[in-house]
Image 1 (cartoon, rainbow, N blue to C red):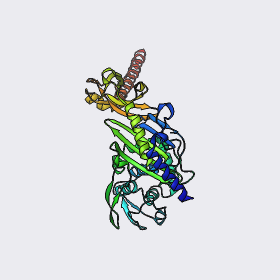
Image 2: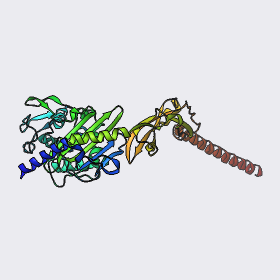
Image 3: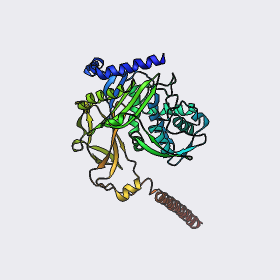
Length: 413
């Protein structure tokens, strides 16, 4: 049955390559269809969905799971920290035949990242999860927590390597959000586009190669492949054309058709995007109050994004003032161009970009004569002095009265 299935898949691939128009019909809402059962394309900064074929449907991710594992690796393991292969890690289903590890063998963090992305090594992924979480279950809990933080709310991860488990699932959109987070980690982006590397463990040095075909796409700047018989072929590609960056995810496809899927999506999506000024510093201002004075702020720069026409008005802004020290304000004031806060641009609940807010002019603060903080000891001293003076005067008055009474008494005698 397995052989028959492989022949059917092979014949399907040949038919798609020879007669693409038969298979790639027009999809929903005027978008082209792809062979993969599930697909999405999002704009990398805004997270806007640009292509959607069952983008929120649950599917098995296979090894594209390892992008999330890599993110947790960089967030939880220090550079130079060593990760050891346990016997259980070595018992994982083999996905790499370029390098054999032994129980107790160790690698540093950056080597682990390279092996994970270049070889998609299941044993490496398991070792990372074991090192961070101390158990597969604990690491899975960290994966789900992180995914939820990124907005990937329709996912449930069970394994660090993506080996099949009926309870290990995600969606194309969720995986795109996870890949979006990967773009904030330069080391991970580099590893996701490394074709060849020399790696050194505690026991050996080896040359390793990434056999993925996404390197042939000139627009690709990072990618991750995946495959299990249940998930079929899965693929993440981060593509760039001029200043436009998109994240494409295709799931439940076939190899090599999945790369044609990616090309179809990119060709459809890139022309949709145009530069738009979302926040213009010339007509934007933000005032804040410091020590009862109004400080006028301005943007450090314009925020220009690649969006579809009309969508530049759909963003929300959140202003956060910079915490200020009162004594420093009195001594130095606010200087023109000084950072007084930050604007965060948001869309669909996702943080898109942040920009500093600067003081538009100089501001001097004059310390009041009676300050609640710095003059407190003086006030106490003054109050004590007045109290002593009052008591002294009172005692003096009493003595005068007594003396006067004594004089009258003596005269009367």
